[in-house]
Length: 229
Image (cartoon, rainbow, N blue to C red; front, side):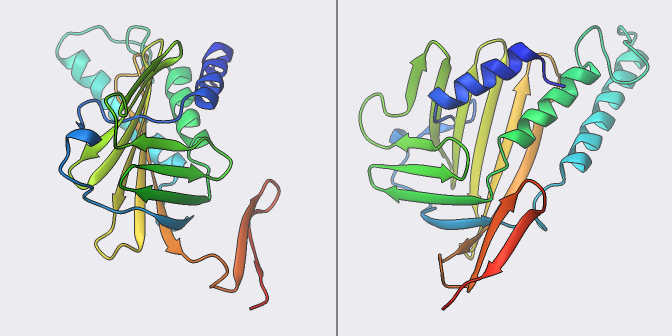
């Protein structure tokens, strides 16, 4: 489980910080124009999105292979599972996965974009903002960390750099037909030697046009009801 201090840090930071980017993306202000227009309404496609348990199992397998390689090279071997010299503990790995799952729960995403900037409004979560104008539009330092945003080719990247070696990265990619969008959320910690990434796929929709209204509930999961035309 996530430790109390880490959980408190995450929630306080997510409430006060709103944008972030890849460690080495091209800043939005340095790119020539906007390669992609993400604006519109998006609904999560659960069938195409990652299963968190499968992703967690894959990470554990990779960490175990890393442990075996260290052992073969004569490095220090940790516990029988995935612990290596105090890092990569089961609690740290599980905490990373839980954090990624918690911040990618938004079933609906609305994106407003123009020549001045972009705002990614995520249902039940904080918005991601990136301004494309002004000398300080793409970096923001605060007592809680640093926000970055920028274009990496045709992808838009937000990164939130938090204290204590923790960072969160969101990478947005649009499909060639512009009907699907992938948001790859990566959580990195200096307590785990590899990052944890969850891919959430969203499908474009027009509000009220499909005749269905869907929402996420605690007890029944995703529930859809018909709407009058």
